[in-house]
Length: 257
Image 1 (cartoon, rainbow, N blue to C red):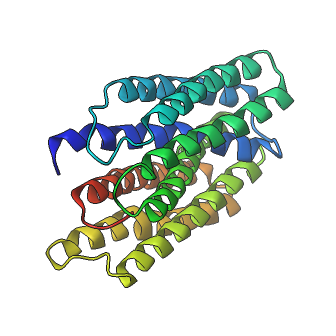
Image 2: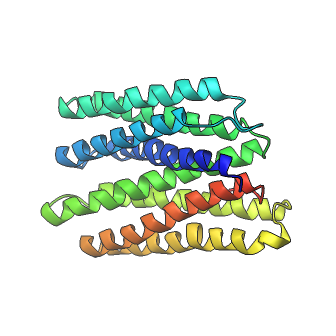
């Protein structure tokens, strides 16, 4: 992979983390059930990730065939940062409907920014975009779920439903990623010299965290939230590795996510 592509891999990581996490917050808060302290912590986390994402955008070096949508991408990233700040304000001021609306809108804008990068290059744009969307949802849901797990340790009476919703979203996004990888391989997107890397990306970034997510879901049925949180820690590391690996494979020209 050319060193000039590394900033784009970094951009993808922070973009999927920030956008996916805010979207996950919107999805889980649709039915409520979490605490104000958790929402404040998540709002701060998303804002920090958004700031790093903006800095990553500012540091991008043009790569031929990769910046055709640069102008709209910059607008979307900037808009996301503003909405992330708005989410923090809405949670701080205890405006539940406003926070929900901003979270959903901000998550959609973040995902749109990620898609704009995928559609700008010379790679298989649609497949790349679909892979980044599922990566954002997976990374956001496992991050929000892992952090939510800590609140159960100090708030035993908190309903497990919000955490279960996040885990189900994680499972769905990982299944979708698996189908995308399988479709890419079936469509001839696998090169013999790099087949082992694609296989490693699949097993570490998709199959392994999927198994972890299923175990974490079962642990919530047993109200073993400490075990669930520990499992989600492992799942988060695997999903992060899979996201970075998938982006790297695309920029290496070794296939799609």
